Image (tube, rainbow, N blue to C red):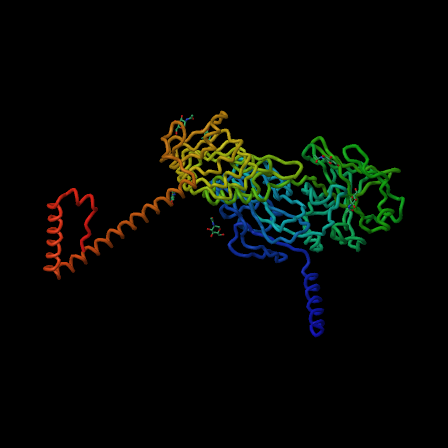
Length: 621
Ligand SMILES: *[C@@H]1O[C@H](CO)[C@@H](O)[C@H](O)[C@H]1NC(C)=O
Ligand SMILES: *[C@@H]1O[C@H](CO)[C@@H](O)[C@H](O)[C@H]1NC(C)=O
Ligand SMILES: *[C@@H]1O[C@H](CO)[C@@H](O)[C@H](O)[C@H]1NC(C)=O
Ligand SMILES: *[C@@H]1O[C@H](CO)[C@@H](O)[C@H](O)[C@H]1NC(C)=O
Ligand SMILES: *[C@@H]1O[C@H](CO)[C@@H](O)[C@H](O)[C@H]1NC(C)=O
Ligand SMILES: *[C@@H]1O[C@H](CO)[C@@H](O)[C@H](O)[C@H]1NC(C)=O
């Protein structure tokens, strides 16, 4: 063992260093692409399309110059189902920045600009509005910051009946676990959706990589804000080093802090107003660095920060808070917004001027609870066994986002367990084929199931008897065969059982018959050969297992007896035959003896019948 120690040490050192050198996990997909692509200027690698549940690849029109330079996309017409997803597996658990760019299908016959909903890990994060493709640059993508805990990232696109969702690219970039820690509600129960990221005083929008940013920063997109309006401010910039930039946990690039906007005497306050979704919480991040050469020490610039009229930071002094000039300062706050606007206001004190470097605004979104894993796997088995057509969908999570549950699935939330359960399943008249899988019983909260009017074959799984909550079971008008499982008798809540119009046969379990007395409604008509219910033919005599064993045993006994008798008869016959054969060989003697005995008898008779009977039989030998 000792001999291996240096090798082990070397190996562990090697592993550690190679892991450390690997940096954050990053994956980029060029949707609709048939091969991997590297895009200029940074030779970013985009994998060819994979992990999608359906859809059609097509050539793309990029709606904005900030879109990655990719030429294909994947779109999802309704025939591919109302929801389609990218399910990306083997993503290490961690904190991620996830960005999805949209495209427009390059085809003159297409109604451009589809409107659809986007969910990340089952949580609705965006709904595209009319005009998204020709407004601000931020509208051509959705970006979220989310914790992934189950090794899989699920991104889904939900049709809303306005065109076909079309996805240009997907980027998944790991960031620091503490990045964008916005306070008490930060963690696995919430995610951030980027509303705006503004770099003040910059000439043009930039990505983190344009700034030479650290990969742990997640290649953020910074839109440019040249002015707050009407020359009320002026842009300044420097080339000098900015202290405390590019540090954990957010790794804001140094370049971000090398420009800023400063208010002027025309309008000493800086004000920015954004349209937001009402009744949401917003996390707002302010970036500062004192790069104005006229400010050299603490106390020379002091201002208040207000949001919708409320002071959120009082007497902000950049030099004092950051420790020096040309030093990055990040402040964050979370506010609840009732209305549709978010107004940020920087109010200088002592007739000074306000300044700002950058602003980030995120909507705080509560992560949806998911559907019980057992029930999801049961639905997956059903999807497979019933050969669900694509148009029905069934991708992503069955119950969330709550706005887009699966076709035919009724969901119920258990707030104690923070899980969704399937309450009802209605896939009647859907042209389904296939059979019912045994797994169906894993839907253990099901109260109602209606698969009426399909072409389902095979038998009713006996495991159905385990779904104790079942009240309504309608399998009418299919091609189910075999018998009605005895186990259905265990369904004590069952009120409606429609098995009419199938090919079922055999006896209906007596336990179900008893239920009719309790005002349940059962229909067994139109089947191949069901018996044992009023209105159906009567079955043959019903025998218990004991009786059946008895019958078999007695039948065996009778058979044995017959065989025994036959044997005895055959043996006797053999004896007689042998005797006859012997008799044939010694015929004269035998004849003589027979004749003799008859003569003797006759003699006796003639002497007096009475004597003979009184003296008993005469022995002849
Ligand atoms: C997409 O564009 C390429 C050329 O860039 C062309 O060869 C191909 O036929 C186009 N595909 C479709 C579906 O229009
Ligand atoms: C953001 O502010 C909260 C307090 O509101 C604080 O707990 C948190 O550490 C701040 N995050 C960063 C990254 O500075
Ligand atoms: C906003 O946050 C508060 C707690 O800080 C929470 O009680 C409230 O439900 C949140 N509102 C929304 C819409 O998420
Ligand atoms: C099941 O669906 C069929 C067809 O849509 C409908 O006629 C029937 O009433 C439903 N069954 C129950 C028990 O609701
Ligand atoms: C039921 O039908 C299937 C074919 O659909 C057949 O394989 C099976 O043997 C049938 N079972 C019974 C009990 O008739
Ligand atoms: C049972 O089903 C048959 C058709 O298979 C229908 O004619 C009949 O009305 C149904 N009976 C009840 C009580 O619903």
